[in-house]
Length: 429
Image 1 (cartoon, rainbow, N blue to C red):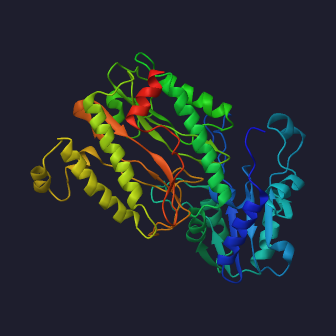
Image 2: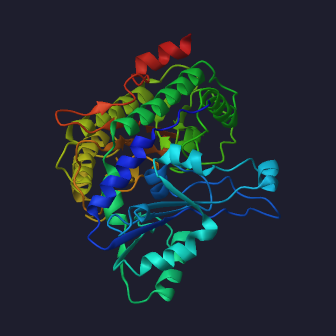
């Protein structure tokens, strides 16, 4: 099989943990994502709601989960609704999960077809007082886009207006932010596949190669190793393109003497990795490029040392920016006096380092977490400082993924080359 299937025990544990957070007489309802039309009769590849995937492991459209831990009848406490297959669907799309297969995949004993959902919901609503619904509460999420979950929330409240409605996000986001051993295993596999892609590219890059060709080398290696592809849209940015943080065309030719910034990583089984490396197109860093590169690498190690349990990301970011200010002064980009004289709302450091250093990583690349939650053991974060100097035509960013531990962080990408000397040696081969 292309990708290892997570155990039913994983999803059973996730549902149990969520159920224990629900007050008495509470029912949680989690909807799948919509199918998204492109044009004519074509659809975007389906991407499941990660809240639903976290609780079931089902990546199929038209799926609904009901959790009602203290329902009167035991068979009403966990119900999974699936799209029923038929001969036409089997021929054109491939057969959907059977009820037996769904139970084996999820650990849920009661499987119903989605056509039965409204009738069962109506009966269970008479028992429940509190209804918990899933919505997208990521701080960078586009709330103008109406998801299936949001539509259902409106429909449910219209039909059953006197129930008490609650946000599921604070509960499930807290659970999702702490990774289990099996989730860490899947993330590590994604990181290892990313490593294989990067090592392949180190032997491929040279002047005259197109950014798109580098992208092709990565996706070839990812897919042949069981990944379903990129964890996110890859950034393959040569020269000054690296100063565009979300550069996506990947359509320019790499030139002698440039640096190549590659923010690209694999997913595996639904879990994501997130890596950035910056390499010299010609195989050797210039002295200036090496100085900037090593400054960023020092920032990676500094950030790792302070991203520890109990710290809040906002405070962590302030410490990173203060340290980056010293690095930028050391590189001669401005003086300490100029930094001190700059307006407080326009510090000079922001000219060359304008983004955050770390984010949660998991089923989402920018994974969810409760608001104002301190760093805790079991979380996975990226660390990705960068220095961008448009006037010199270069940008350097380095990024690894770290599991937060009680006594120190575990670098899940420790085997991926990052030292300047090692990069040059591997490219020389």
